Image (cartoon, helix red, strand yellow):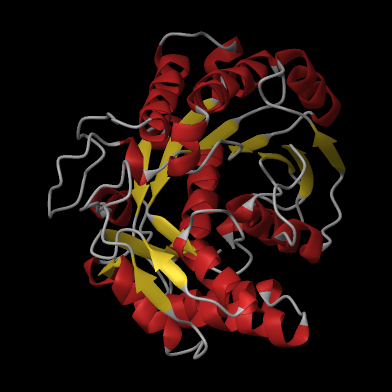
Length: 358
């Protein structure tokens, strides 16, 4: 897989113990990478990272806003490939703590990129942003990589600014021998087991089931592009491979969204989740949630054409696998992450996707 680019490579993941970061780190472990992680302590209990029990080469519990400490982590790890996922990743938290959101998502990203620039070992950097980096015009069609960036809430605006930080490092800030290749990756509303973040639909639903009460739907008619976490993680890995092997051709922004059939309302997702988690109940808050957009969708034509990436699991499969992960944890206190990754790889291999073929 991935032309064995990650085998025995020194790979640094910021935000390795978060939802996406933990799935990425588990897959890198299966790819036999030498993994280093930078993050704050996990914010939730339980949390996916502690359940996985992955052995890293070194874990640094460091705030990315502290440049000197982050620089020390880079010097200790000498990474060849960097995945930057550390962020304040919640829309609602952006309203509660706007200054923290701006600092972490913009200055924190600048700190990581500056450490990459100063490093003698880094060759490829993938910065994970979001579909919410686009200026939202409530279009029914998908946003393309060439569409205008923007954001009216602190989270969205900070992530669009994060994109601009990466652009500045790519085009105007020199690095030794121009050896570092940067790219950004934008995904949709990501679902999957092991997410216990606050104010996210499926984690809130699972918490309501374990408490025996009802989840409140704040924006039941809002439409989002729902995708399994492994679909976007496969895209991040493929992008890093292409940056590492081929360079400038892939040093761009890329959308990794689901198929159009995965555009579902919040309430539709809950109805479908209930098919696999019968105890789930909900009620609707008629007041629209602050800062929530009504329509949001990604156009992934570019990555399908240029990198031959596409989603492996459709919407129904993604909902099923997510529900089964949580059912396994609720009923048996077991983590199904490795099995999910192996089954996903088998399905991708059947479809002869480029990253499964050496």
